[in-house]
Image (tube, rainbow, N blue to C red):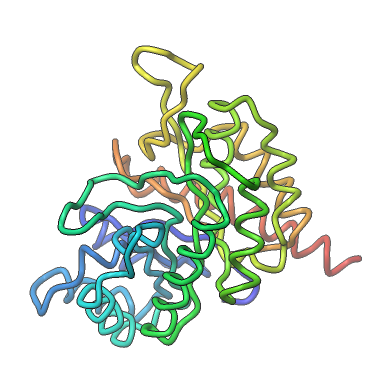
Length: 280
């Protein structure tokens, strides 16, 4: 994939269309936890997709900000999947979802303290050592202001990258949602991130909270990418150059053709950036 191109999250209802789609540079992303099985139709479908298209694995279960090391069995199964399908990139979330034997169906926040930086860096390094691959870590969405922060999120991410050698998965919708909810500056946040560390970008849609409306945005992945997020995306690509970009949609799944229209929009931004840089 040279130059970087745009992809889609692979959904079961779209397997046939995804497999047949001739779009140049198209790639697909899956949550590996849905494919950590020994056999069956899911792996057969993934095998067929991978023969023709590049694949990205975007994990949701390592719980890298937990107060314990990543689960050894989970890492082992993730490594087997990665070794089998050879994704061009692997990523995880900057969040926690497990404590002891208790699992939460959410990606939970934490205070950005020096102690938590040590913990996250240790867990990221452990995961990368087992996987034998570089991970891209995704910035979270925020809904409430937490106490206990000792640094900004860009500072935390920059230090994490420097200490572990990981990269960043920049979710621009998360940046917009968090900035709106916490009355922060999304553009300033994006400017503060180290450009060279950004290995992939996610674009998704949000939903207003049913009770609070536009004053509380929810990272629902259940709507089209907003104009505000498209604007931040174009500005970011102009600054850092083209990066592999994913259109995320996990709820209210539309027709494959609708997702492809958004994908083609992102592809157009990437191609225009490449042309501009070639001329310069």
